[in-house]
Amino acid sequence: MMDGFDGMGGMGGMMLWMLVWGLVGLALLALTVVGIVWLVRRGNGTNRLSPPESPDEILSRRYAAGELDEDEYLRRRAGLQD
Image (cartoon, rainbow, N blue to C red; front, top):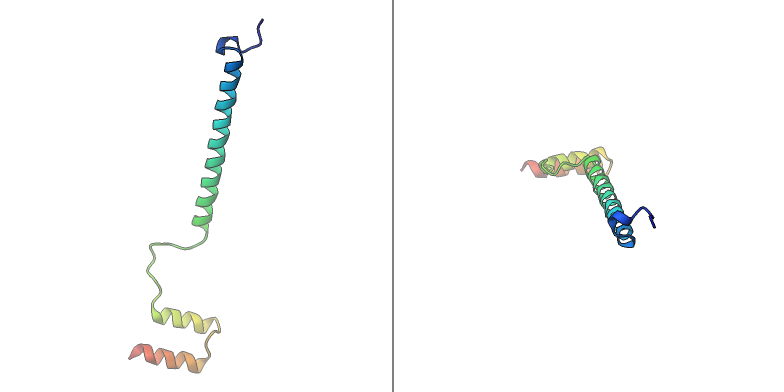
């Protein structure tokens, strides 16, 4: 009787193909997850090799964002220049 799997050992051949396709599916899933993680890390705009902000840059950024008023900004900037 020919069921299409005689060359692969009958029912055992079908199980082998199911295992192969299952592994192919897992590999595709893993590649998809790795690709998404890579895109998210690449797209967030941070560069791990960039130097950290200097105190003066941090102070200027905080003043520009409105976290500090002008008096506080000038007082802290004078303190940095000492």
